[in-house]
Amino acid sequence: MPKDIYDLIQRPRRLRQDANFRDLLREATLTTNDLIYPVFVTAQQNTKRAIETMPGIYQWSLDRIQEEIDQVLDSGIRRLILFGIPAEKDAVGSDAINEEGIIQQTLRKLKADYPELMLITDVCMCEYTDHGHCGVLADQEVDNDQTLNYLQRQAISHAEAGVDMVAPSGMMDGMVGAIRDALDDHNFTQVPIMSYAVKYASAYYGPFRDAAESAPQFGNRRAYQMDPANRREALREAELDIDEGADILMVKPALAYLDIISLIKDSTSLPVACYNVSGEYSMIKAAAEKGWINGDAVMLESLLAMKRAGADIIITYFAKEAANFLKV
Image 1: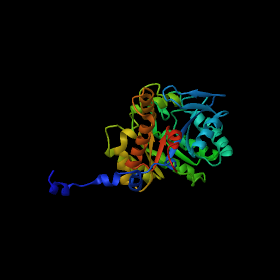
Image 2: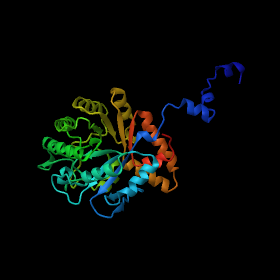
Image 3: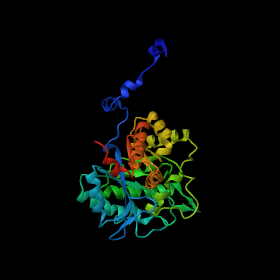
Image 4: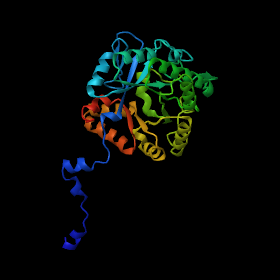
């Protein structure tokens, strides 16, 4: 090659030549402070039930949950989002608003036993209704406005039990405003709302429905969750939740929707969360079990991609595992 050609070569490899350069110039950094770990709590007794479709994930009874929490704390994770599986379900999800409901009991116990934890709760009805939909039904359809009343009552009951932050996930119109009004009216102005602002009707949720026992008994959730084909609609949903008082906006799922995470990040000054959902988790686990991929490396690369896309917060079933590789 003639010398004048060499003179024209740009050499970005100079800045990748060793770990010191790569660490110095890394644009996105993943730490344990970015991660929230989901925990499933069942009203059954003496239970640690493996979720077959989510290797390493369990339903825990309240009398055994300390086994999980101790491991979480040992990993360096300090933030949990709680999902409840009640002993009985009915058409209006009564356990969700019961002061002795499974989540309310869990909040009181964990707050007493582990004051260092941040506890976030899913505010939705699908885990508590016998039909598996995210609200009260009227003629086989979810009644949006009637559901808002139940979500208000659920959020208040969680606040009374000591929750640090609520996370409404049902994609009901007006849910953030209704919950904010209810919390403020009951003197819980300090409780923030992390809204599932941009939640798609995704096939990636399948394993979660095993874990939370929340699969719809008829139909689907496409009438209230977003169409995976839509991008601009995400901006509208996020803007509405901002106007209603959301403190954090969430995009769900994460890995297949990195463009949406980036879009929301660029459109708001609010913190942006994403949910690395069950299907994304289980696919990596299954491929790693077969030896097709390096599971740890793909896990970390996937989480880093979410951070690079703009997520400030990542809810992930990998949190405990990932923490073993990360520095705070």
